[in-house]
View 1 (tube, protein in one colour):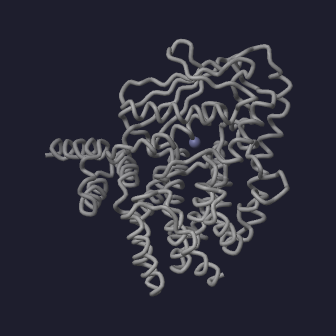
View 2: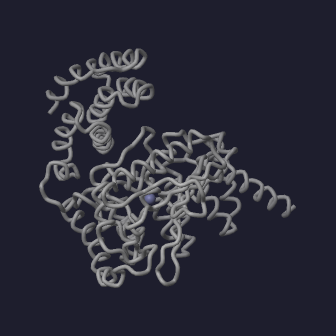
View 3: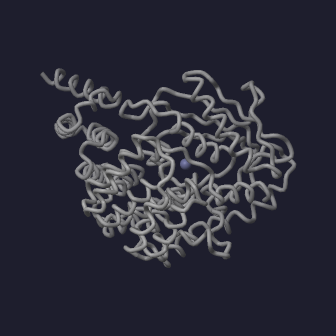
Length: 451
Ligand SMILES: [Zn+2]
């Protein structure tokens, strides 16, 4: 494998701007000296300048392999394939993935089996229903220009067009210029979202339907600012909108495949696009009868019978994948997220505890465990797990926010203060976070009050 990596790399060094190519050359030189740490840092600079510099991205991933960071390398190779599936870098990334992750997800593209060609079984609600808009009339999307820039509004419109293209021939998705006539309304918000919802921290989607199962409106809310007060880039807004619009159109669950836009966790800062699986899933959803839709005379009742079957399939699929990949952290996380989505917190806890046995440094899973115990109203355990997430990522504002919130609710003020002090020491900017600031004011008040 090592030989292949070295031989191909120079050959696909193509068009990058001058700074980027300087970094690229420096990186290659460091790489050849086997200084992978420094090489990786240099390729990272090249990628910052040009996100589409696939040569640097490929080298970056190989550096991760050499540094023993297999998971990260796998994720990077997937990224390259997703960015330009027909490129030489992608074809080499596929080869690398097959040897790095032989049971991994990379099968779908080459495989003739249709089992993983879509994630339609994950597109149902937690009680197994298909929710989507009536495909016999145009689906109307309104993007509210308030609270944001024209650039961001245009990004969202681009995301709408991506889904329209994916559904072409199956359903029409159109942009409208009035809130009143819209099925889906996208609004921008300067507030940051609840961080306890491990995903959707950048946007939320709330479909509304009546008691007699009539879909009325889907409201997508996009945050323009991170919980730590950072303003999101237009590309970030685009990616988030693309994901949230998938929910608004009817994909209720998440894909377990990182290359799909509907994968639950996203922190990429390059422009993403819909994968072949995303497109197949939305098409399948719109070709199937719906349980909940915006016209009443549909085949909803026929579909209801399928609900139980679908929800079982969703768990079954996750269990099957786990059976095939018993040591895969991602397979466990996927199953855990399915249980969590169904509100089955007990099973979710069992699964996420296995994740931390497999990877004791998985801060995200400790964080989720904290959340699961919080949902079960077990503050004691919620604190234990949130604390572990904070111990692993002490400078991460989001983690300390939830921990301090739990401490305050348990009236453990001294520990809350200590946690804040610890965060300030590592991340002085954290004081600017509105939640942190609010906690500080509250704790100061408690202190004064005691005196
Ligand atoms: Zn989502």
